[in-house]
Length: 243
Image (tube, rainbow, N blue to C red; front, side, top):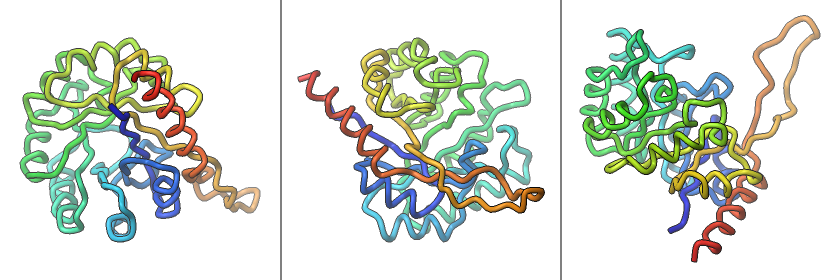
C-alpha cells in the first residue's frame, strides 16, 4: 500500500510547491511557526479552486494552547460553515480541558458541524496524559485520523508510542508528523507501521525585512517542491522494498 504524504502549508506558493513535489494531501493553515492557526479564506479558495489536491483546513482560533471558551467555539463553528461552502475535503482541530484531557463536548459540537467532512484531531493529542485511552475516545467520537509525534518533539523520537497507537487503532488512521524529511521518513514508516505521514518540507523564504531594531515576526518559511519530491522518492523506495 502506498504511504499517504500530507504537506502542511500556509501560503499558496507552498501549496503549489507541495503539489509539484508529489504530495497527496494538503493541510492548509496560517502561522506554521506557531503550530498552525485558522487560515484566511482567500488562501483556502485558491487552494481548492486552483490545485488538484484534497485540502484539509486547520480550525484553531488562537495559538498558545487548545482550551476554548464559548466565544472561541462559536468562531470555530462559523469557520467550519465557511470551510464547507468552499469545498474543502476536511477539517483539522483539537480541543482540550485545562487539565489537558480531551474536551469531548467541544469536539462533539465541532464534529456535528463537520457533518460529512473528514476530521483530523491535531497535535493537541501530544499533550494528553493518557494517549492510548484518548485514542479510543477519538475513535468513539468518530474522528477519521489523529496527527501525532508520539508525544515527543519529533516523530522519530516518538516512534515507539506511534507504533503502539498504530497497532491499537481500529477505526482511524494514525498520521505521524514533526521533523519528518527524506532522511528519516522510510525508517519512521518501517518502525511504526503508519500509512500516512505529515511534513512541511520547508526552507527559509529569504524575504525577511527589518531595520535592525524593528522586527515583524520570525523568518518565514516556504515548502520546497524538491523537498517534497525527496520525501516522495524515499517513500517510493519503502513501497518497493515491501513488495
